[in-house]
Structures are given as C-alpha cells and as structure tokens.
Image (cartoon, rainbow, N blue to C red; front, side, top):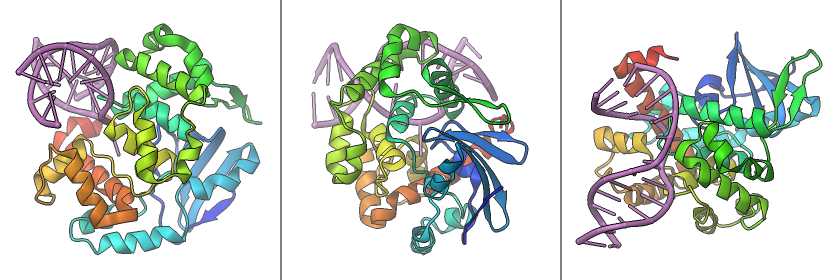
Length: 289
DNA sequence: TTCCAGGGTAAGC
DNA sequence: GCTTACCATGGA
C-alpha cells in the first residue's frame, strides 16, 4: 500500500465517522469509503496514512481530501493557544476537515436535518446503490458512486420517501432539480465570498443556516464557516463563553471574530469533544458504536 | 412510551 | 420581526 506521510497525526475514525462524511465503514484495521467518485481504503500508520485507491490515479487526491498539508499544523498551533479549545485540541489532535464533493455534501446535509449520523449514513449509501453507478475493484469488491443531482431528482419524491428520507424527500428532490438545472452552480461558490456563497445556498429547499454552513465548510472549502448545531449550543451552555446558546447568529459572530479562517476547524473540535462527552455520559449510546 | 438526532419551514402573532 | 408546531424514522 502506498503511504501518505503526515507530520501530524490523522485521526481516521473521528474524521471519517464524525458526522462530516457518511460513506466510510470500518474493515478490520482499515477504513473503506467512497469520496469524489473514487473508492478509497485507508489505514493508520505510524508515519502517516497507508492507502489504496480505485481507480489508482485517485490516490492523487488523498492528501487534499484528508486535509493533509502545511496549513494544518499552523491552524492547530493557533487554536491550541485558545483556552476555550486547548483541551479539545489536545484530546483530538489529528481530527481533520475533509474536502468533499460539493453536491454530495449538499445532498447529505439536506438529509441531516433533525436526523442522526447513523441514519444519514444509511440514507446516503441507499442513494448511491439506488441511483449511483456500480463499480467493481479488480479483486471483486462492488461499490457505488454517489449519484449526480439529475439522477437524484429523477428518483422523485415518492421514491425518496420509500427509501426513508421522510419529510426531507421533497426538499432533496427540489434541491437536486435546482442544482441539475444549473440554477445554483455549487462548485463556483468555492471562489465566491463566503457570505455570497451562503446566500446562494439558502435559496435551496431544506437548506437553512446550519446546513448552509456545513456545505460551505465540508463541500466548498470555506474554512471560516461555523455550523451551529445542538452540540455547539450545548457546549456554549455548559462550558463555553458568555453567549445565548439559543441565538445561533450571535454564536457565529463570536466564532468569526475569535477564530477567523480557522473557525470551521475549531467547530470540529468543539463538536467532536462535546459529542463524545455526551455519548460517554449516555453510556448506552457509546456502546452502540 | 417517550425522547432524541449535525434543523427547516410556514403558520401565527 | 419573533415564536411555535409540525415534519418521518429508528434506536435507546
């Protein structure tokens, strides 16, 4: 297996199964998933990440997908100096921001509203098997690409409901249709100012403030986006700064002024640390993994 | 049985 | 403008 050397660690489980991406499964000591139309197999190594890719040239994208680059160490050193983040950064050093496909991130986070990670993973996989393209590795492992917006739109609301999308079915169908028609050009939003990109996303059905920030952060490379969800609000309420947890606008403004371009990575640490603490306290919830 | 999950929408003030 | 009920589904 080729090795991607990384000066800083890469926490594969926290990064791949922590609610950013939804197509990763554990296979023994390795993680197998589909990203950007490629099937990847990743395994933690003392000096980096060992990988195999199908098709093989997809390996060129592994570093970018995992957020491996010189910027990570710098961002960590800035965030680790913040008393609000010190503990979380220390505990989860190696947690990465994944660089995902804009449309897949959009579809997945439309499905994420008032939903849980496990079920989102099931829905995204079901979409791939229903409307994606079946591929096979040379050694016979079948996998499915994530379907494009036209293919998702063509499934129709009724079929999406049958697949378990619930009340989000019409949102996903309409958003897929809008993207397929080119009324919102997702990839171009990467190069636009974050506020403009955010406004464009909010025009999509099923995309509100929080989902828009997730798409900006995980699918469009806007590292300053700061999704405010239940867990971040919980963190504010319990041990965060003196803010109203029920006022997402205020929380976002705080994050923006405090962490700037690093806000998205900061959010990942807060989200992950708060969620892990909650799961441990829940006992049975932690066992279910 | 009730609560909860990476919320969004629209009706009602 | 702000608050509130409702929205499917499955696991704990």
